[in-house]
Length: 351
Image 1 (tube, rainbow, N blue to C red):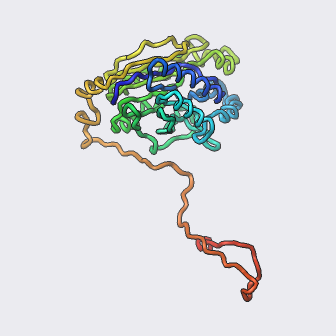
Image 2 (cartoon, rainbow, N blue to C red):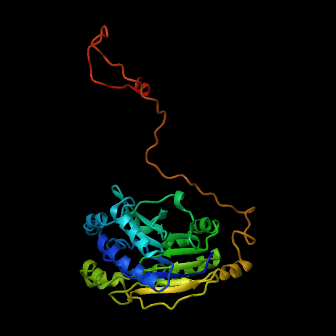
């Protein structure tokens, strides 16, 4: 690994506005690059924002937001993705972007790793959406649980509570990850009802990932802006559910950890937008793994092992495909056959 300066974004998107959010992403990436960052990491589903509406009302209320949210989700093969790739290429850094992926009629909680040349090194989907997220998003699979070779070293990414899934973490550690992006949504929802959803537990998960993996962890975390509160919270009760500490903007708890678990940046206020930076020195990985290398001298693969299914999930499998027979064409000099339109019969279709 090469020594680099890395950046983790703490900001709100332009909620459910994909084009405007890409514009804002461009400004943030450019700012980070001007400050010397070679890697810029964004929160979970930052494009076009996390669907907080699923937490705040009944299912009928949430459904009213689906058309706009779906339309502003990002398809991998789309002009918007190519525009984002072009922005990254122009600025010349590596970017890890969290996005709601639109694929036909479904959505997935996805991350894209884009290199300084604007090439997609990886797009991946969250293996299991958490709790009520499953009403919006589909599941991923083991095909994209991979660590890639970025220009500076081994880079991987996971979303949110994938960081409390021990086996998923081990998949990443086993690929000798050096820098990890732990993308989080805003950590404010239900904070007086469900402690585990708050910043204390989730930042601890990022810190422990750094220690277990012996890697640097960037944990970008989004802010819920006043505009988002105005749109989503038409009652004081909803505002309190979305952020019980302030009944208003907040939820940003971005951090960066070193391989020994220490915090490498000074955190911002939870309602403050900005970019956090840290210098990543590969010597810190060597020192951390001198005592604990979970996939090396401290691992026991002879006693416990992990199996990964790399097959990509498919809803249709075609079997017994037979070559299509050449059609027999009627001509004026073919005895006993009248002229007919071209057609073909597959032997597999004949009973």
